[in-house]
Length: 211
Image 1 (tube, rainbow, N blue to C red):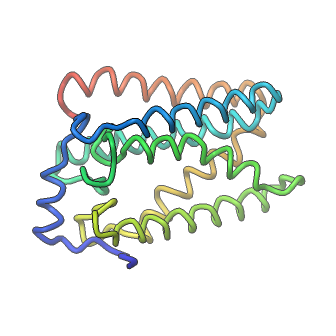
Image 2: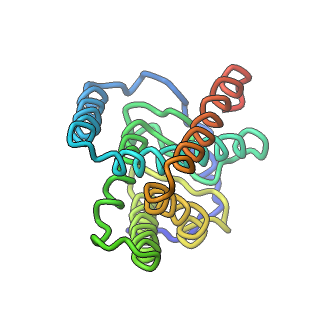
């Protein structure tokens, strides 16, 4: 049920080679429903003036997109990405490592992490929260890698739960837990920098066929 490392098998490589990015072959109405739910959650928080919650969400989501772009570039230049989602597991693949459902989940993950922090958001509490959420997400990814429809595919033998936990999910949740409590100027600098890089990368690399 759980897979902890990539196996480097030809089967895994064939599954990755079969991935069709931004194809509408599997598209269905759940795409719209999920989008509506995300809009509702964001506007509910905005109406409540929970701006730090929004900042937490955008901080993690922006970092998530940078990672997904980096993963797609790894696939382009080195043959295979660090992680991949399969055609059978989703309605729409945005980049080789992320589908619509997964991306929308990450658009809310920062909110969830920040809201789960104790009222006293000390450095220790924020660190423990980030580590706990990172571990949970790494284990969920391990489960997804073991599903029969190959929801997640790991090709490289050195890539798995441990590197995902350390190099991916910890930075994600550090962003969501720490950025909202920065000074307003630093918050803006972080968000503007991250999202500008995301936008620029998508504008440049998609037309070039890199991602």
